[in-house]
Image 1 (cartoon, rainbow, N blue to C red):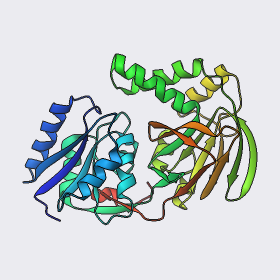
Image 2 (image 1 turned 45 degrees about the vertical axis):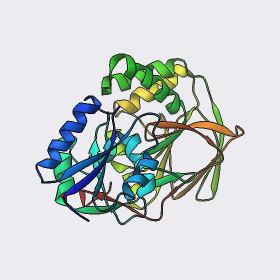
Image 3 (image 1 turned 120 degrees about the vertical axis):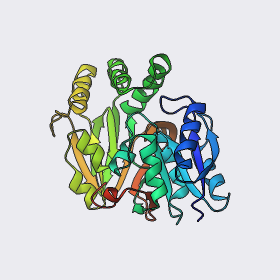
Image 4 (image 1 turned 90 degrees about the horizontal axis):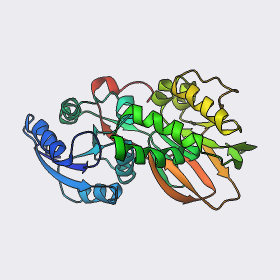
Length: 305
């Protein structure tokens, strides 16, 4: 791999800089290391996985992605099992994946990590064969994300806007899911407005939740919200957002390596790392066997992600 060339998949809609400014800043950051940059641009209509396959076909060079967790997740779906490592330039609102790997959120620091050339294997999860890095969910959370995009368009991207979207979405949410959940073959029937699968111990820690030991064993955590009225759901959401959530009160936690979720509705919106798509059930969640290789700082090579 030539260290003098980088191919950067850039989501021009991510981050607080406009697309031209982000491109110039990234180009200058790589230039400090004597690396030239070619860009593959994507937007809301672009497919990150297709962009990743295009980058892989372009010959020798570093491959990196600049965007939020949803864009990064889409790119990784084409990079899982490749020996080629992927550079991460976080440009999103929360950047859970980058932060879990110790990758700096500032652009120059992220490029420094990529230019250092150190990489580490990372295991990702899948839902019906589609990868996710941090979380996948069905129910209230996809509704929250739809609301959030409207708020972002009006007020801009920020964590305050993201939290407000939770309140606004849940105030009008009335759907209860009737589910059969099988965790490593053990079935449970539940009624809930939300199931939330987590594959990132760092995100659990940020939410003030247990389950890091589950991730460390190579399993996934499934959070199930209690079946309650909308104001009760809002109260549970606030508890989660403030790190004050209590098990068996604000959520139930299941842990396993193979999870299947069944319901009567054939299709539902599914959120994966902040991106929404319609998927057909049943929904099967598992850890992907081949790892993904990520450029990481020395501090990101150890510990549980």
